[in-house]
Image (tube, rainbow, N blue to C red; front, side, top):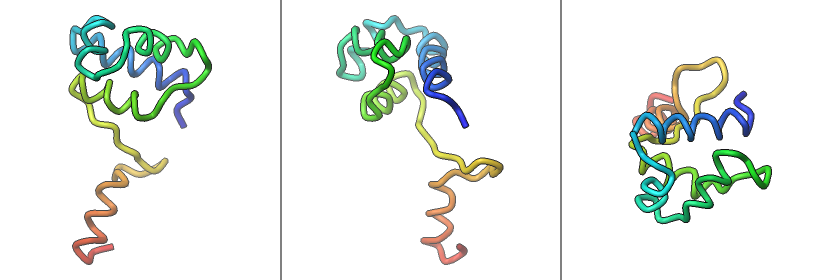
Amino acid sequence: MSSLYDVAEMLKQARHDANLSQEAIASRAGVSRSTVARMETLAKGDMSVSALVRLLEAAGYDLKLVKVGHGRTVEDILNEQRAGRG
């Protein structure tokens, strides 16, 4: 399982990969630059999931849940169940 520190590092890497400054990604995601900085450094020891999702989307990423030891995402499993294969 990824720690919160790992998630913060992934967010920072996603921003760098998208060649976005903290200010630019904050603007795209509709959050403050200080929110980005706080989430990347875990300044308050936690992070907002809704802000994380918006920031990842602003960097061109999609948040997916994957069960440990499996390659399928929760979304894959739900789609299979909807199609009657689950």
